[in-house]
Image 1: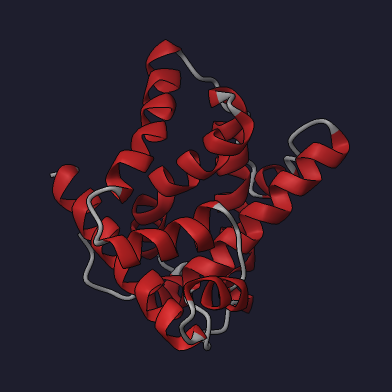
Image 2: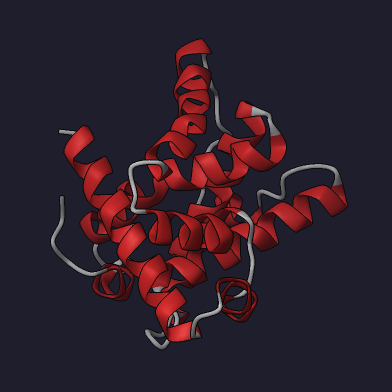
Amino acid sequence: MDPATDDDLLAAADRDGAAFTSFYLRYERAMLAFFLRRTHDAELAADLTAEVFAAVLLACRRYRPGAAPATAWLFGIAQNKLADSRRRGRVEDAARRRLGMAPLQLDDDDLARVEACAGADALLDTLPADERDAVRARVLDEQSYEEIAGRLECSQAVVRKRVSRGLARLRSHLGEEGT
């Protein structure tokens, strides 16, 4: 697994294909699981994931590291793509077309792999309870840090730290599983 931070990878992604690939590999499964959980359709989840990463590649020059982690930026793009898809009744493929990417052609093995990402919930169960609850609320349930802090009766800083640690553990686990 690439030791570079998400911020480093995004800063280099527009000029370094390896940096973009590392960022993509870090979050491909999480993105597929995010969409699969919301759409219950493996093909749609794969299309939305492809469009998100195409949009990331086009927008990475504008990404600015800040208070929010890169995952917040990534999942913000994902939420927008999902909302657009629901509003239009189809997946918008403008970013992929701008990059000259061909439409996805998925076979049964590809669809099975996407559906296997639904098992991401099982990965959450490997986290300590405080991190699991924070990650689930922030990433899967799309709650704000303020909402989570209020519900858990702690500060937003504590919630951010739990989410950050939980995501780091998941990323580490996925990296070990992929080897």
